[in-house]
Length: 388
Image 1 (tube, rainbow, N blue to C red):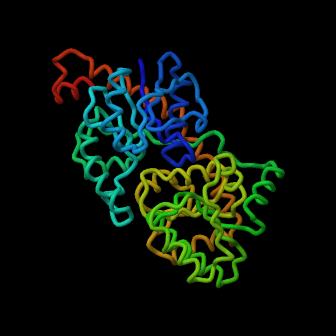
Image 2: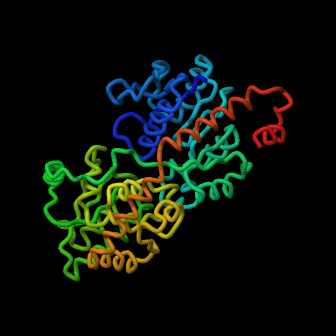
């Protein structure tokens, strides 16, 4: 097959979608090197990404605004290349295009937690996502929780939505090299034990309650710092203001974006990793932290239960007291931390990119076969029967 990938998320400082695209694409090419792979991006990628394998870049028809590029310019590029299937890993895809399409939709946050999004993004996504989902030949999502939400909000046929859970890169494992640990500690000014958060800084991540829980712990004499790793997203003012209000400016460290290579050491150094997000389609930082041997506190909600299983302490994300009590419990009980470390490493090993790649390739083949099959399968009922 000739497989297309919308790869704009591979440029620059990668976030969750970028890591998903990078790991999935790299694993797919290792599992199936006999196929050809072509990448499409709305901006030039030379110098901002490292080649993963045998993929080639379609280096024409750029446009800086991704949404406009995707709807007006990318369809022309796809007609030029004519891939057998094209995978859009960042939840949007062209509405007018003959190319067989698979789209990854991670969550329904713009429908479930709309108050946590910028108005412009909210209007655009709530307009386009249902149309993209209807147009797509198949939808990949990353948890059963997210699949339930997609079916409930987008009203697409059940057989169209396939769960292929994400995984963690083999780069994430306990760091025992003391020189590497000391280097990362020095780089980010970490001289005391600390609680770690990793992810975008935005309201949905529930950082205000985490900061309030941390303030309660400081009042009881906890010597730790709270280290918040990640880029600033939307509506970050109240989060920084809460740190000032609670007089924690010397105890809460905002590192900004941290490069991929430093994350395993940070996970390995922290006493506890806290991720009390209000809603997640998957929650990759939880899996990364467990793979590195960190004791994890996360939310008893959405997909986080599926990811964490019994290898983390689960809390009500709306309860500051529960968050604080769980962090306090882990601080006071080293045996519990050791138990969660063991369970977390074992659980994280069950999520592999090779398994995700093989399932994704199987879906590519089904979509391509269904699209180019005999005319008897052109109606929806026939296509579903063929897949079964």
